[in-house]
Image (cartoon, rainbow, N blue to C red; front, side):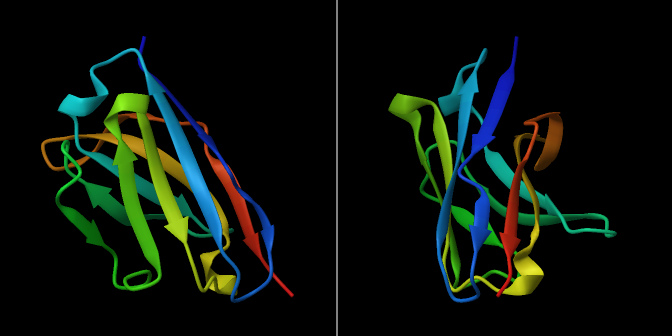
Length: 118
């Protein structure tokens, strides 16, 4: 079965950094584009970033561009999100998702909480 497990979230002060990981199993990870999506308290889902199957092409929401970096290690079946210069508005549950037809598909992880607060 497809399984996506996020980790690396936690509490950080504004300006700090975190690296999120998503461990994938149950499918050929290297064949799929992947995304990060987040949900802030009381708000809807917000797409954050995407990466193609080979890792050579990435895209970002305007709100995180220049601060976050998506990457992947296909040999380890792992997706990453490096989060720098964190802001309180980055506080959210972060999910990794397998993409189908250019959008986050039916397979999502359980999420990892990121809290940015002083």
